[in-house]
Length: 440
Ligand code: SAH
Ligand code: SF4
Ligand code: F3S
Image 1 (cartoon, rainbow, N blue to C red):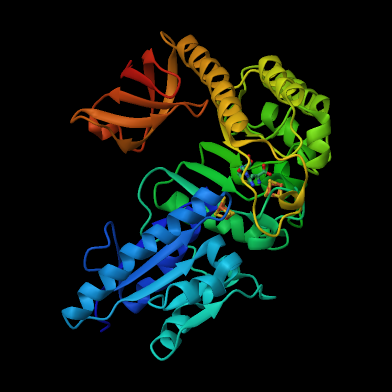
Image 2 (image 1 turned 90 degrees about the vertical axis):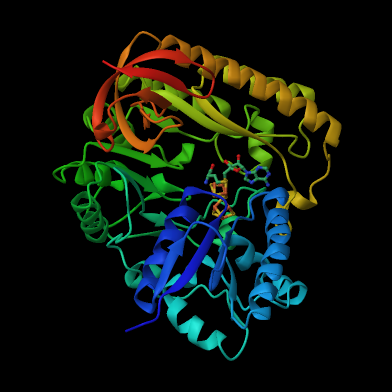
């Protein structure tokens, strides 16, 4: 019998990192590692990191300091601790981490998780670094039975990497070239999740609608195949790129009842000039046109997006064009970020840096406008009865957390037996970020 060991994984970044962290826990399970919620007494700590903005990267180094203390305290008690850094910072700055943090035992990038058991054996004798992009896919050898999955909703990675090379973004360098998993593997994983009580599948990819698995017509075709799996009641997908919103995918929003009326479609800017220097390869009007086409087949679709303010060369006029796009389209949930120069990306060498003060002002303006839109949308649902999937426990004893079809977060007073079910809820209150409700 293997001795049980405690494994603490801390996850930053996107949903794909959440998916990966769970797969890492699964592959380490047969070795005796059991996932725990705090680092206390952990025999192994994995920091699954994000490199997307400078702030995200800084957080890793401050956490590493704490992990060093953890390791030293355990050492004083005669216990060994393995410290690992995974994810996109590991991929981008593996050598720097090994140099700066001598107590780190392992550094490995997102494409090497399937070799974790071998890396652990190796790490007993030497420090391990693995930032290769192997020819075989990690998905072929990572366990996909989701043995420890709880709850009615689950992430499922179907695509990874990116070939788009937006000039601000590190993802093509940290995750590598675009790769689509075979349809059969995705359907098998969907069925395994269904057998564990999952009714909502969130299909994930850094560029999920670039999905091009053989045998189906793009992501639209794959969604149709997933919808045909008995027991799957809700499907969502993220994150998509405007250039990959093809006819089949748009049609799916009208034709497939399980596909929820919510679309996260990052646009980044409303200025054609800035979109061009970002290398997004589409115009602001192209984005407006996609939205009009999606609304035609699904008039109630809720829209979300990502925006970057203060990209090099962004003038007040360019910024105003972004605000105008937001006013024209209307969003129900969105994220906006101050541009952060990332080492190794083309934008990091661009002229026309926007002063920090202007970036601060613009981010406040854009966030105010977006929040007002989110609030308006949420308030308009007060008094309505919506289907809510209860996927978590609430703040008080008789409360559950759930999601409406429009991806709104809602806390409702209800019998706790409704956990995991889709239930009719009357919306009783709203802010810009969430709803409250009562089971009808
Ligand atoms: N694949 C997705 C987004 C991945 S990153 C897409 O193509 O849109 C998530 C978001 O982080 C991006 O949409 C962008 O808004 C933001 N982001 C990426 N790089 C950034 C940078 N260097 N500075 C600020 N925000 C950035
Ligand atoms: Fe990054 Fe998305 Fe652009 Fe790819 S498409 S480079 S992931 S922002
Ligand atoms: Fe961050 Fe890597 Fe995801 S940089 S956003 S964890 S792909």
